[in-house]
Length: 207
Image 1: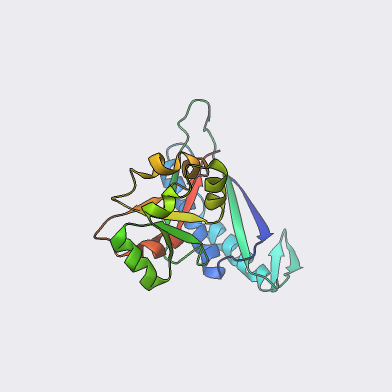
Image 2: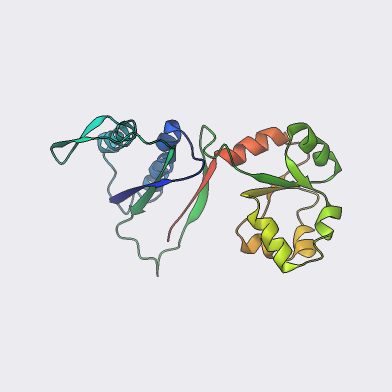
């Protein structure tokens, strides 16, 4: 196992708890490929998480037997974890991808738009959630540039179950190409809970 951790500045990113929960999918991957790789030492992982958080708080950590003074940032940090899986041949083994729901909202500032039917439109108004109806979507008139800009203006989309099959016909493949095809919301699902679920879900994939 080779792990690389990168820090980068973002306008909005989660708090320290997110750093911990972001690493939870790692355990899922180890379980998934446990027959092809050795298990990670829990103590090593715990120490790595502890050091990352301590360094970000400006505390002294030990690296390579030497003490290193941490640097307190004036912005919130996000951590990107890259993992190399041993004995995996991308040309032969099936590439995998998926999502993982974290206990807390990993992306609290996620900008979401709902493609809503009449019932969900009313709920969106109550929640202060941006939404468009079928009539609004038809105004794009399948203009690729407008639809592309629309896709860029939001981080994610939700759609009423009754509308999901109409979206490709009304908007074309634009949202799908942008990797933002809407998540379905059924009639009986609480919209507020679905929004929180979306904010708490992260994606992982094999490259």
